[in-house]
Amino acid sequence: MSKPVTGPFEKTPGWLDWYTGPSKPRFEVPAGAVDAHCHVFGPGGEYPYAPERKYTPCDASRQQLYALRDHLGFARNVVVQATCHGADNRAMVDALVHSGGKARGVATVKRSVSDAELQAMHAAGVRGVRFNFVKRLVDFTPKDELNEIAARISKLGWHVVIYFEAVDLPELWDFFTTLPTTVVVDHMGRPDVSKPIDGPEFELFLKFMREHPNVWSKVSCPERLSVAGPPALNGEQNPYKDVIPFARRVVETFPDRVLWGTDWPHPNLKGHMPDDGLLVDFIPHIAVTPELQRKLLVDNPMRLYWPDES
Ligand SMILES: O=C(O)c1cc(C(=O)O)oc(=O)c1
Image: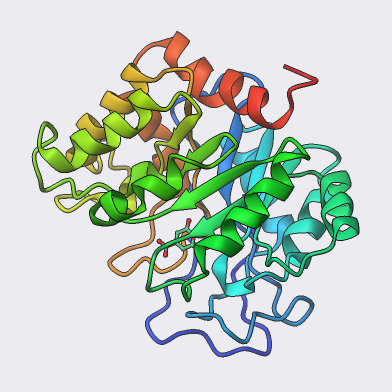
């Protein structure tokens, strides 16, 4: 893969660039596997970062994303709008239209988006919108605006992706549980893995999924959630051990409603930048049978993003 570069923008101090030269995974993903959560950043010279952004990344282009896809053995991607681009979806849409049908997208929109713009995004491969409740990433969007957007995109058959921290689930519960679409949770709702897996916080998340069959979860980002490590670097085959029981519980309880993604290029990591090949090697620790792996990596994402082909 080519090296990360920065365009006309100055990166946030301490920014960690994505890892160049990822290892070849030892775990061979099943044929047709989908990386169902990844991003593109810019390039900033072509697709400027949004004025309201909370961080400025290094560039991460569609070419670099698709080179990683091929290297890791994946067949397709779901490109999720990154908050550094706000509601300007051009970089993400550009990635979709240059994917040869191998990428779908999740956009961020405002209530001012027109029906024609939604239709154009649909034609490009967008199948969802992202609602973000992580305070360090976005400013608050009023719930009535989000409800209006959800009602509009539901008519296109799209879903809503939600990103929030575990401690905020109680206060967001009523809003989430009345959304009219399939709802996909980013990164397992960010559990605090230093708390007990059978404690009230993670139990509430499991209840959220149990009581609402329209709720799905990405079992991604062990590198963000892990407190104990060790990091996925230098050939480490047993990284992020503290995340495994949480992700395994979700995969085994809801095998037909889980997705997995690299989260490349891993915005806002602080301690280390993982080797993406080793992140792929993490998968068999959380989906321990070939059947669970096939559901997680192929059947579920295909059903959600390419229903005509699944
Ligand atoms: O935790 C994060 O910082 C993060 C940020 C973004 C984004 O900026 O869109 O996306 C993610 O999936 C995770």
